[in-house]
Length: 198
Image (cartoon, rainbow, N blue to C red; front, side, top):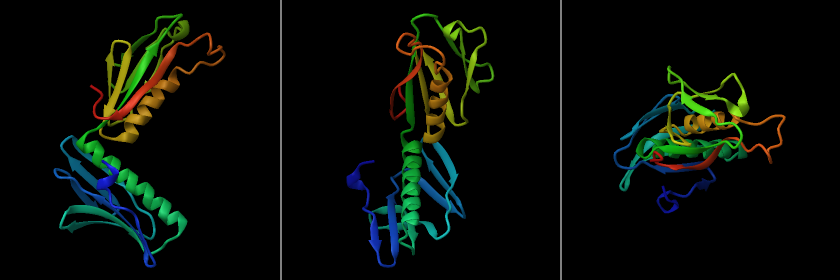
């Protein structure tokens, strides 16, 4: 999504209006508080509602778009409208391209073993700094985790789920009580972007 294709925020005396173009192959449905975005890679639904903000889809000559309107120009309303605009843009990117985070498994002192649990809902990190009990990082629903050698790839269409899963895995190997300049063992985020990280 480039800036050139995005319509600028319009601020008028009557209020504010944000427009998000809907690309071909993407369907956006707004029902009450729920915004549903459907595309080639799947469907995402989330609740977006705030008093005084109106979300609707409009048909224009150049294509369909989502419009976020408000009669108020209050700073708080503008901020929420901006946040919702980002959420909807991310939902559109998610269902068309997806998101990925890559993490590197680093160990100098103790060779840690990283595996996905049998249930497939968590990542198990055993022998971290020689610990007997494995550390567990939960996989948020909507995120997919793959182990590729010394690399972990977290991908999915929901940016929040992918980002939270990657953050949880990274946080699980945070070192407490050791000098991080000496003990550099851990799992670290090395790359993130749009696509499935292949």
